[in-house]
Length: 366
Ligand code: DP6
Image 1: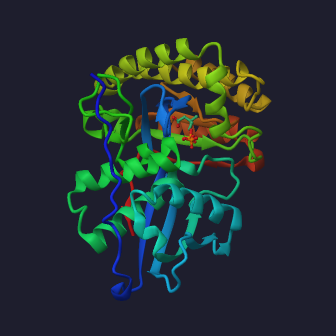
Image 2: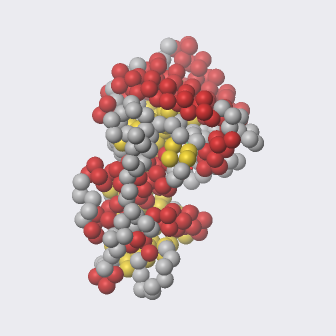
Image 3: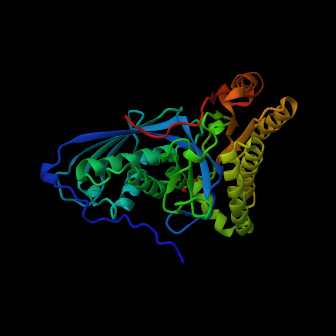
């Protein structure tokens, strides 16, 4: 039997405009790196296959949500959006569209005058996907607002589920940023409680070696991507390999969960790199085909594989939908790996830029 999807629509969440005091809510929410990739979706932002990710620590978005009750009675979303201290109209329009989608869940969005200030910990246009951290930070602010005004989200698990659900509607991968260490999103029959509606925590099941795992990000290119993730997902619908891919993702998901629980670094690394390369293979087999890796991406991949052979150390890579590399490895080899990055890899990074990151403790209200 099809599992019933959760329904968060709620016409009762309207504020008493005459009594609403001005206020502000602020969240810091991290990015995440998918080990099994979400690539291909259906319906309202549902994933074609289950995914699992590590939550990062240093790459985050900080968002403050200022609100007051609206004076006029117009029905539109009323918000001003500042990015890094400056008004940003394109980002503001994106957020307004997102909030419009959320009106059935949060009708109060039409009643507020909102001022949103957002900034990223990583340099702007470092080519790091920021939709996961940005959308999850926003969703967390809205859930805190709901709880502050209506008192309806005092249960922490329910709070996080709803924040994850709302994040998903902003950007699929964002729903996994809500949880510390690791998260699973999508139906599979492998993890109790997993659903397409929202992500659930996986940190408790993680072998300790992964809780202090590193994920250093090498900025190979800062340039804007030629094809956005959202368009890329859409192109999976016409990809001749799509159904085999979804089958493969399920199989790998099953295998990697075992590796994550057992601390099996070798299987983890093999599957992680397989997923990164498959993601890019899917782009190259889309219509029209496209390539987001750069020559230096391949060069560095080669160097990482050589390093592994030479040293026997468990250093692996992953890729997002872009040219930059994530270097994944356990804490016990941090000194060696960071020396290796400085001496042999940094020269292939744009402006020599790379970011030290690691698996982290999830979002924080600040
Ligand atoms: C390659 O979540 O950015 O990072 O849902 O359209 O916003 P939308 O796409 P997005 O896609 C992320 C794709 C990925 C893999 C992943 O994070 O699972």
